[in-house]
Amino acid sequence: MKIIAPSVLSADFGDLRRDIEMLNRSEAEWIHVDVMDGVFVPNISFGFPVMEPLTKYATKPLDVHLMIVHPEKYVERFCDAGAWSVGFHLEAVEDPMPILDLIKAKGVRTCLTINPDIDVHRLDPYLDKVDMVLLMSVFAGFGGQKFIPETMDKLRHVREEIERRKLSTLVEIDGGVNVTNAPTLFAAGADVLVAGSAVFKSDNPEQTIHQMLH
Image 1: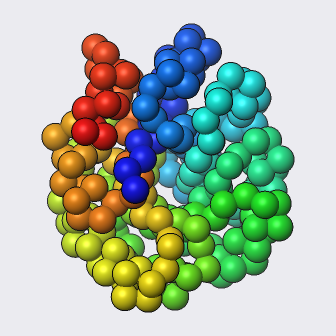
Image 2: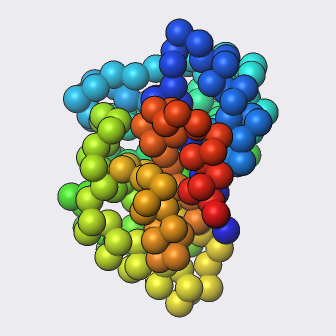
Image 3: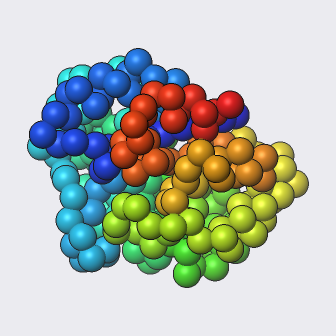
């Protein structure tokens, strides 16, 4: 599977509808929505008010990534606001299972995420309990960062573990993804690549998405 999920964090919020309609036309299959609270990460992005235009104009699934403390307080609201999948950080919670159950009860896909400084083996017990895991290849909080090369080892480990256990869990990579490294990431076992700056700051975003996939 090869999916590009452009991050609207890098879109032009002065003309969000235009950018969403561009993604609707493009070969991107998902739209990635980064939610930051200024506590878990040193930056603040958007919340429920921005979900409204996204759900109104987007014809593709909204892949919501919560970079927040206390995700248990908000996951159901994001499900109700139109999220197709909801992910949160393993290191932000003591026990992810009750939160995953809240998301599943809404009929929404589940994702568990880790930052680059978290041991990838901590995901192992949950690989059969989620629809997807997201490996951050930069530190969550800001767009435009450079890809952390050690992510490749984490990706290989997760892919090998999924194959060994014959699971259908997807693997998503987020951070520093571009036209140059996308083929390598797909070849190493990534199913979904999140791209922000590489798409929205390019001269031809639709062509950039096409190049990442081919």
